[in-house]
Length: 116
Length: 112
Image 1: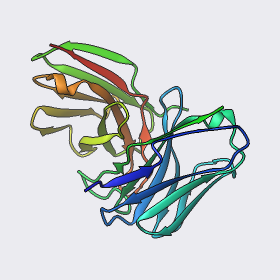
Image 2: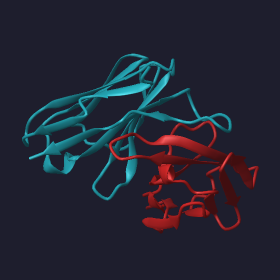
Image 3: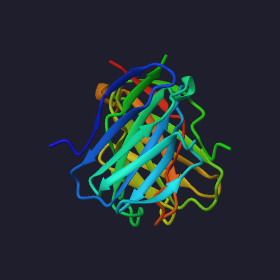
């Protein structure tokens, strides 16, 4: 009955490689997000998709390419991985916009990416 | 520019006492504020929220207070329990906007 799931949970790879992280939500939400939590613990939004359309792109390098095959999935592909990409990446989902009190985003468990 | 700040990286509180976590923001356009709780190796989970038309919202042991003039909010947990030990994130946004701006978190440790 997992609401937002991500795979893999841990990812260790060499610099220069290409990797993907998958995210799925079974909450019936129409909006999905990718967040990055860096070593300083800042949790920052990277992308958001609404109904498979890109809504937010927070000046993320174009080595990062999100792909949303349908409303329930938002995958993150990263090309030419760099040391600075090491972080925990969280997927999240919600109904479109936060329209009333109690509305929130639901987060997945995170993927810890380590680039060597 | 850090628009949401949690200036205390950590806080220790005796079990049964009150835990008070603080959050400051700089963007006066924010009108919706949320608190999330995060355990290790898990994603943040929603705890409680408050809109800018209120100054207090309560849910069981958790109460959030908002002081708009000071651009300050706080989360009160009474009584504190060992299961409350976690990292607490404050987040802010505008209603209708899906972009959350997070603080850096406060690690709360409840001492039995």
